[in-house]
Image (cartoon, rainbow, N blue to C red; front, side):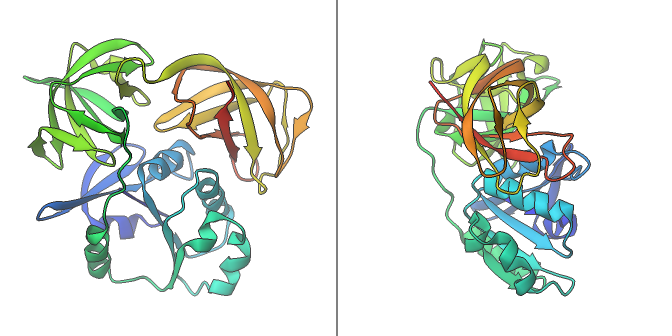
Length: 314
């Protein structure tokens, strides 16, 4: 999957419009090759669509046609979420020398940089030729949305984060804890028996209702993932964050399609570029694996709303 930032026009030229919520997905298919493009439609008004789209995209294309807070926040989010693969397209007479100082010592420093908008037809061909990244391990699917379909039951759309999801597979719906069976699987409107990591899937699920599988739910094999509403974290504050993290702050923690409100408990303070340990009390149960890297955000920030990254401390 691909994430396109700051150009809905480019995203629409790379694929056929599919589902639309606070982000829009575009689908491209040629022969046996396919690609899904995610674009955060409701960003910058809302921060979650940016984080969701970045999560979905194995690679990122960022169009820079001006230098403002929004561009800066997108750069910070890419850095915090560790997006190693990407392309910066410079438009509207923005020059490389204007951008290079801003991305020095970040993951974006190694991205390809292109002056002027490339031909979308050539871009499509190049994107379809790329081999998908395989993430092995137990099945894990992050759910974007779920809805009822007459004659089928509950249909959930999401991304296979890890492993392979298979027809007739038994999966847990987390954090709720209900058990479900995958009745059927679709990838780009084609029925398949299984789908590997990186695939955008539509799953028909047995024994659950749409409300049981809301956005942020995770489908996984039993016993693989953990659920908690209080977590001890190691926090790495972004060097570009302008505020101070301190005890009692109401922030958000995100991973996959989860974006959960939480309250910080800590001693002292953490500023830009610093690391430390905090405890968060989440408003709702959070699904995680010990190896997950999560993002922290503060929606009241006057600068970048993305605070930094964190991992769980056992």
